[in-house]
Length: 238
Image (tube, rainbow, N blue to C red; front, side):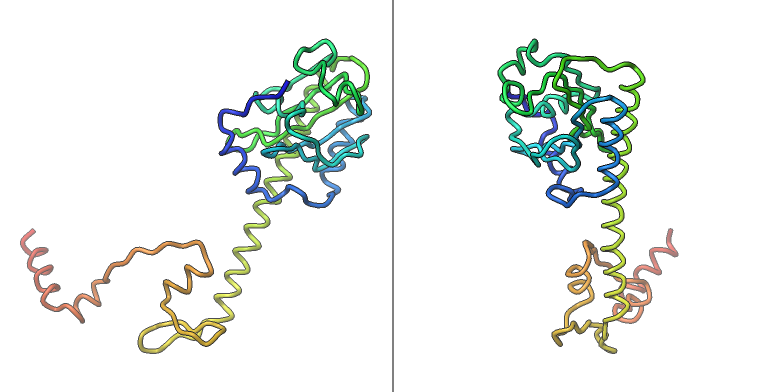
C-alpha cells in the first residue's frame, strides 16, 4: 500500500533539500549512529532514510546493500506521516505491507520501527529505522534510545547546514574585504572584469540582500536646501 503525501509535503521537501545532504558520501558521524541503533535494538538492519519526492535515500546503513528504494514501497514514507515512532511487529500481518516487495522479497522485512527525523520546524525529513527478518517488539528502553539517536541525526544535519552557511558568509566577507575599488566621486564599485556598477548592484550580485532607498539629513541640507527649510519650519511648528 502506497503511503499518502504528508500535509506539508512541499514545505517538507524544500526543507530536506535545504540541508544539501541527498546523494552525499558516507560520513562517520551518521554511520556510527546507525551502528549504535542496530546494536541497541539487536537487529541486523538499521538505516538513516531520507524521504525524497520519489525515493527514499539512505544516508547511512547497516546490513543493507541498496542505497535507495522507491518511495512507493517505502515503510519510511508511512513513518513520516506522524511525529511518533511507527512500529510494525509483523509486516505479513499488516494489510499495508503484506504484499510489499520489500516484505515478500529481499530484504524480507518482517519487523520495522521508524523514528521520524523532525526538523526544528517540525517537518519529518525521513527516519532512523531498524529492521529485522523476524517478527518482534522493542522494549521501552530501546524505543527511548531510538528517539534519542534520531535527535542526534537531526543535530548532525543542522550542524552541517549551519556550517555551510557560515562558510558562505565568510567567503562573501573575504570577497568584500579583498576587492572593491570605489570611485572617489560617484562611489561606484569596479569588479574583477573592470566594469563599474553601483554599490547596490555589486552587493546584490554577491549577497542575498535587498535595498530600500532614502536621503540622509546631511544630503537633504546640501542638495535640497529648500526642502530642508520646509522640514525645519515643520519641526519648529510642531
